[in-house]
Image (cartoon, rainbow, N blue to C red; front, side, top):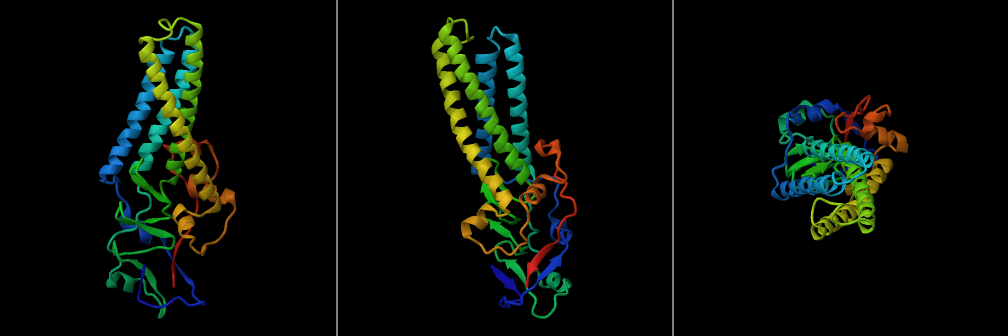
Length: 294
């Protein structure tokens, strides 16, 4: 990281508060989408796997069931969770994670900040932007991202300040539908063993077994993966320390807050059921100003 102008940090260093609007004004855009081949393929695979689970749950287990109540209750629950999971995935993928405007680290712009003698701002040499505190450069997005946690190919985007809520919801809902599908697979196997296999599914017994085993493998794999990721994200939010900051063991230079305050900073203030909705943009209340190290 380069600093501009080049002055060494001293023990008496202070932080200069600069309005968040200054940082995000030129970053606002109607649509955010990363043109990364690997990320796009991973995102498509994610949707195809959810649609496969949808197919097996509906056409192999629920529609052939003789218990109408069982089919309606489980079908409604599974489809609701799947819809919320895919909606969360879209929001996480198409939401600006907190990109810093590119190319604003010009001499004219820095002079317009009217910094005092000895004061400095950080400059990212890769995207030529003024780098806020706790921002990191993403080599895939080719931008500096505020409070960047990591770049996730499964959502084809960085997980940062503006979309962490949607990523957490995505992992939570995927874990829930994985658990639900596993429970239904176990129940369906038991039901078919007790009854005639030709009557418990619209498909042949071999095809039914193969489809259920594949769904069981997929559900178990995603349940483990997303549960671990969900727990990691919640821990990261509660400790107010991103994945990159933990990995690099960066010195903590920001104010320490309670776990509840950190949760509200991500999901919005105050607490409500909207925390669990991917269609609700978090209301962070009174936004804190960003600060540059000087």
